[in-house]
Length: 86
Image 1 (cartoon, rainbow, N blue to C red):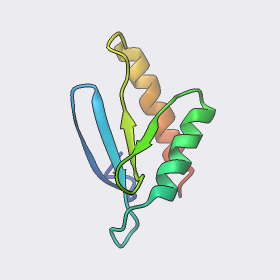
Image 2 (spheres, rainbow, N blue to C red; image 1 turned 60 degrees about the horizontal axis):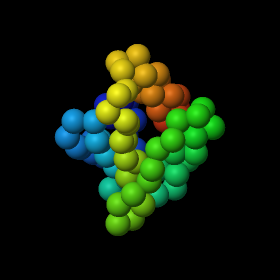
Image 3 (cartoon, rainbow, N blue to C red; image 1 turned 90 degrees about the vertical axis):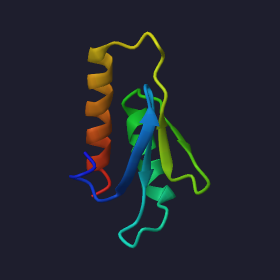
């Protein structure tokens, strides 16, 4: 998804805890886009948190009992939410 959406500057984390950082084309923190994506995911019943010093990172923290199908559904919802930023 990062290759397809220039608003995603970085994806980092370990295991199930992942952060997706959003920036503007001139590499400034982009809290507006992060909040648009987070709200679009919420509208599809997926709860994600925004965090970071500039509130421009979306944090994924699924429960330890999450299964592969649920991760796939979450990624699909996230991908659809990203389309709302273009």
